[in-house]
Length: 187
Length: 365
Image 1: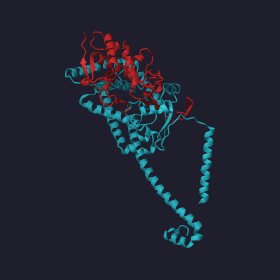
Image 2: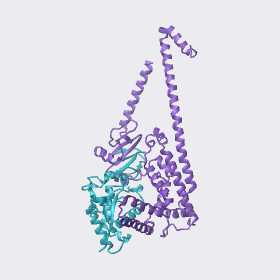
Image 3: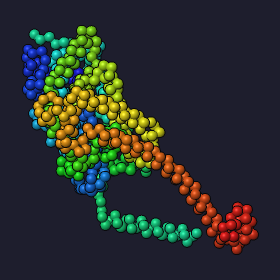
Image 4: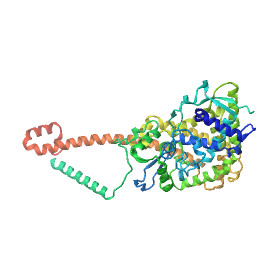
């Protein structure tokens, strides 16, 4: 939501899509979500740019092994920096720009098969609850942008929004996100 | 003395040569590493946002670099290609989880799916979770919960609109996620008066779970957690959470929902329903999380471990000082003894008087 408030262009495009899919109904249901390609792209882009757990939960090596020509001893811990991979310029075009469009023409997903985008890890130790997590996020975001128009308090523009992170198990906003909602009137 | 010193020097030289030769015989290529401090390794370099620091380090040392957090070697992976090697090509070898004190205290001795070490127990709980708790069918069965909670959230925002108040999106989004999670896992929302304590407990739980215990990386600094009060806090939170989970289970049992449900049905059963019924039907649940006696035992064990470490530390601390002083005086004594032994023909009158005065007469003189 922070990125959507920062970038009115993306917000309008998302609202257009959600409102055209839902039509005259008062709220978004889960059946509608399948048709919302841009919504899915926005969520992927958010997870690329701001993975909630930037250093994936550490793994441990069980035996001596050779990885890419290097010897790794048993007992070595492994930290995968999903945050750095999501911002790696060799995988992504303009990695520091929030641009959901990049996912419209690509099949990259966060389910653990495309290693450019691994907010939930991958393999045996990958997060098994991805489906449960995304189902609620998609529904909430779609309803938020469908039923309301959003702006920042005091008429502040998107560039002023403080995006600093607070450290912890999951990285989150340092200051809470306050926004003014206006109920959307269907014509 | 001179002979002894020369002997020691020769011995260390031989040892160094042997070590050098053995290294040459089995050449190991380690990933590039930034320079490190003797005891802390690279710990001092991490800062508040390790993902940012590690990204900067990786730009200098490459996508696979070896750091040392205290005594623990840590491989940092910072490219998609290297991540594929670790999580796909060698997935099995890298399937273990490191031990963390906080997980042991807060998660019943690391008995949950995320932090449990690789082995038969982990395979069992993983299959239970994937097949019965997080399956597509189960996720779909909670559709009604998600839609109801989202509608409730929208109504709250509408109220803010009417009162012309800004919406705290951070809090409202956290609340809806939390309510859905509670209903899915525990069967109902925990809000209002009874919920407030639980929400606070969950926040503290999250914070403690993310807390780094220095003793995990520098074992001899394990006491820091005890002195800073971190372990006591974690134990308190673990105890309260355990009581809370007990109450939730009791409620399910009282309502007669234990064991009566079909674990594979599409009916909307919460996680506690499913696990209780699996416990009753003994499907795959030899070590299941929901075995309350095991939970109690595990908590007790983990607590005892901490107390044990505490005593262990102080024991070694005092033993260390005791032996240190003991050897120090022992060494001092022998030094003077040999010194006077070889020199007595020169300093004979002095030796006898000194030895007499210092009471060493009984040791041979």
